[in-house]
Image (cartoon, rainbow, N blue to C red; front, side):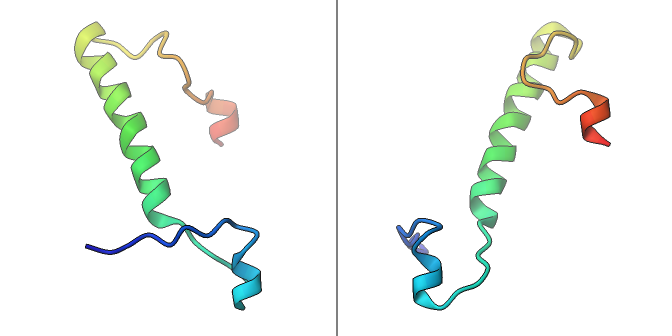
Length: 60
């Protein structure tokens, strides 16, 4: 299994990097939100009043 490097965003430039991506962090965050959303949909049958949703104007 891959080992995650415990560097903060301020440390990467000292190692010579100009840009760093965190694909697993964003994937895990999105997966958690999707799980909560789909659980709510399963229980309520609708996504109205689901806390934390971005409104459509901000989505655009």
